Length: 573
Image (tube, rainbow, N blue to C red; front, top):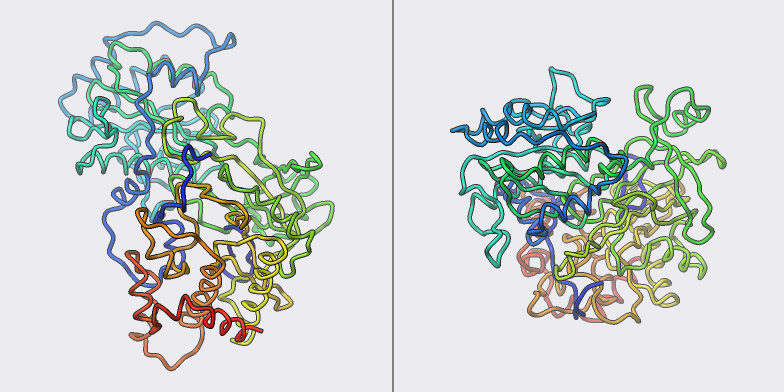
């Protein structure tokens, strides 16, 4: 991935064996390279589509609590449960009066936690999912991090939320039906609303998970959102079942890590000896927050520390997935700016640090050098999707992971000349060729965001996270890899019923689409605005590769033929 301006860098156990990976159309991977204004369905609908089959349930409230918020001897006895106070909530004829009654009913069970009515206040933070700013009905915060009364909704501080409905038709899940996620409009929209709220909280903080509750009249569901999906309890009657009260009582007496806070990002003050040097090296404003981040190397087990501020990437604005965030990081011992990537790697894929080590040892030219990499461990939620009750779900298991690279570059779109652009793509193609021929490694995600230009004008191929050893058979995941705009026509036309195997030819074709996209969008030309828009629109079509093929004026047989691959190689050598 690349920074918006000059600087940029790298970003980007299935139960059954698959021939190839099924497709997905996650908006965070499609939208960064969208070049046409499109009319979409409402945001909640899009979020619900992304979360299809990623709500896991129903599980019992007791199993949920014991799994995510286990009881222990340090938690004091819970206060007496008063059914009458909760019955008052459920008996309200409309939804809005329920909010404040619920705050009163839960107050005895909230120690160190503040519940606020945020139903009339838009989030003070920019919307993470397609710009949608949120306003949950109730939000809860740690007492030490409560926002101002003027702006009570702040997803950057929020621990979690409660969403209310007062209509059975709005119920997002069906406990007694084979399909847990009903297809009808209102349940779908409610699920999308929940997903948008979870995304806003997770994207504006450093989180491992987000807890929430859904209230519909007298029924309640507890939920826990992770990068794999959202676990959901069966519906229970909170007026006589104390599970909701128990949830808040245990949450009140839990550590920040158990609550889902990633404490490995440690905010540091101006008194820290390294802050001043970091601000200068990273060109930070005085008000910018600085964090110290640890990385434990997966080979040497050595711990290294780096100073970062905010990520320059936005690929973590999605309800599930790898949540890749890239930071310009200050390496104190080396007194150098490096690249730190924090993400949730998918189980079954080679850890990206291991891939870089193997490629660096060949050595593959025109790729960054790895400094350190390893799993983030030692706190609840550092691995998600491995819960016992998920054994029969089709989902991904994610492991929290970090790596640090020695090279920081600028976006491919910030070329000084078309000659430099073509040379940068040539350099990346050379890296791809050597990795494939000498390392048996196929990149599988050739895109504009994964080729950078160094200060010396050299091209580098980055983000090997989704790469694959070509000797490995079968699929590693239930979702197809690659950035949609630059996938080969053959892969775009593939279906789950008629899958195709990702080959080296598909990657080479992606280089062609990258060059075409950058030239069409960023290089001077004699094309009219209308013609240019029509040309670029072909990259955004989501139904098949035919539009791309037709609008770019190439016959399908030529795109798959060896001479086309050879021709591209000749142009960039």
